[in-house]
Image (cartoon, rainbow, N blue to C red):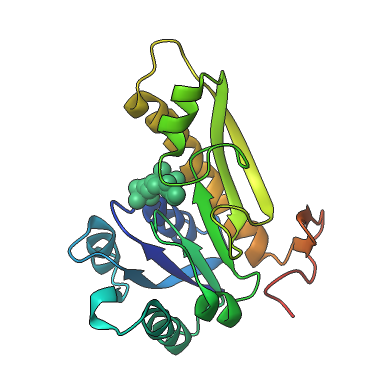
Length: 210
Ligand code: GAR
């Protein structure tokens, strides 16, 4: 089974969706460690409840962001992590993580990228007046929400939506989409070529299986 490490900064509902899909046998993977840059968040509690090692790594305890990330990489490597999933991890990923896990870091974003990157995807989509939004799972590169797109799902934006109602509608799709992307990776079916991710029809040798 593919060994997955999850980085989260908050509620951890996407972490939960991935853990549940793994436990139900729907995804041939297991979450082996959860790391948060914020203390006491619910994501860490969810991990502990599931018997999964949960670490808070404090950026302020390090001399630089690079040192912080090297500590995160060390924990991931100590657990034999093969795929890193960012799940509501509200921090830009830097060189240490990218070099340690090339094309092996995924993120979920609550908008249809490349529209509305950043911290407030749902709010920005609503303010812009788009009629359709959604979520995107992508590989992480050095940019902000710019990496190769793996899967997307669309939802309607309704006239009476608030940021909260739109976010909830998108979140339902996130919980379906993220486990699906992890499954494709675990099956070795994702192939990255330049900006594009191709999904092989059959199980093959994809990213993460070289
Ligand atoms: C999710 O909606 C996720 O897409 C978003 O934060 C939420 C985390 O929820 N991520 C971003 O906005 C990243 N820029 P969760 O902690 O319950 O999974």
